[in-house]
View 1 (cartoon, one colour):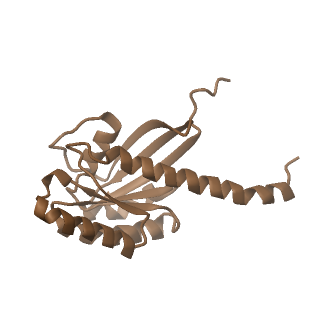
View 2 (cartoon, rainbow, N blue to C red):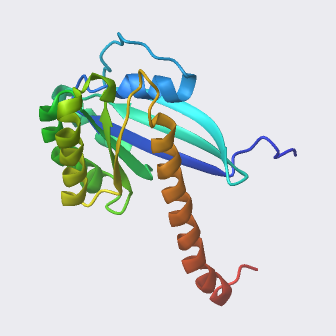
View 3 (tube, rainbow, N blue to C red):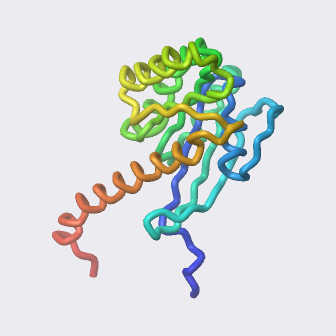
Length: 195
C-alpha cells in the first residue's frame, strides 16, 4: 500500500470568538488565499482544511470554526471532542470584542482538553487607526498573559499579515508537544513491550 500521500500528523483545531470578528475571512485567506470582505454569518459551525509540510512532515489541519452567536453555544460541545488546540479571535478595530475571550477559554478548557494550547488572534489590523494600534495590541497581549494563553498575534486577512504565521507558530507548538509526549511514553513502552 502506498503511504506517500498520507499525513504524518492530523491536527483538529477549534476556533471561537465573538460574532463578526473575522474568523471566516481569516480561514478563507489561509486555506484558499482569498479575501472576501462580505462573508455570511457562521451558523453553528464551519469546517476548513489545509495540508502543509513543516520540517519535512506532512500535516493535515482540520479547523472547526464555531459560530460566535451565543444561541449556538449549546451545540458546540460536541465539536470540541478530539481538538488538540484552540484559536480565539477578537476584532482589533472593535476592542470591546475581546470581552468574550474569557468565556471561550472556559469553554475550551472545560469541554475540550484542559492542557490544549490556545492562541489569541487579533483580526482586522488594517482597520485600526495608527494612534490606537499600540493600546489595542497591548490589550491583546495582556489578555493572553492573564488567561495563560500560548501567544497573541495581530493579523489582517485583507493584507495577509500574519495569517500563515499564526498557523505556523501553533503547528510548531503542537509538534513540540507531540514530540515531548512521545518521549515521555517511550520508557513505559519498553517496560510493557507488545508481543
